[in-house]
Amino acid sequence: MKLHGLDFPDDLLYAPAYNLWLREEADGAVTLGLSAYGCALYGQIFAFTPKRDGWHIDKDRSFGVVEFAKAAASARCPLAGTLLVSNDAVERRPGLINQDCYGDGWMVRLRPDDWAAARAELVRGQAALDAFAERMRLDAFDPDGDSVQALRHE
Image (tube, rainbow, N blue to C red; front, side, top):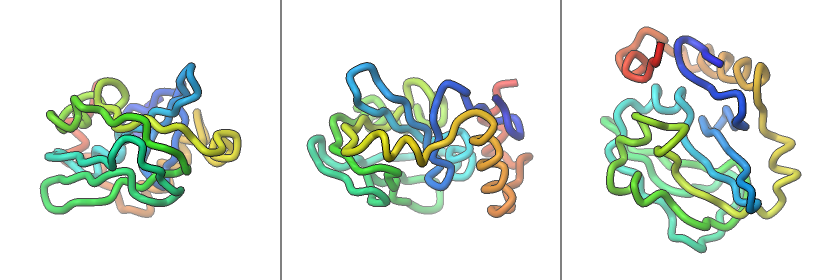
């Protein structure tokens, strides 16, 4: 699926208010990463500093800090859970988030406290595109901006 040239794979779940994608793993863990829209908003990412493995993260609390050109922001979590592992490759080369946000640029894996409840608040498919389109409208997002052009795979 595409929106303003940005990819949103339809096999993932999304938390548009957090600009994150989520994928349930076979072992019950959940992988989180920054969506293409989040990458476009931040621009080039220079650092990702996650919380420690084993740390319990409450819903709406930070699982790490993302540093980009002009600022830093807490990466807030759309669900409560225990951080199992962060992506060491992203810590060493944070630009992986921009280069492959849905693949090698994943950020953390969590063991959710209540996956069924959290999953019910996530969206996929057309509902995800509609939610991101509304966020873009509210953010006065420029789909022709330089950070967007760098992410396009058309």
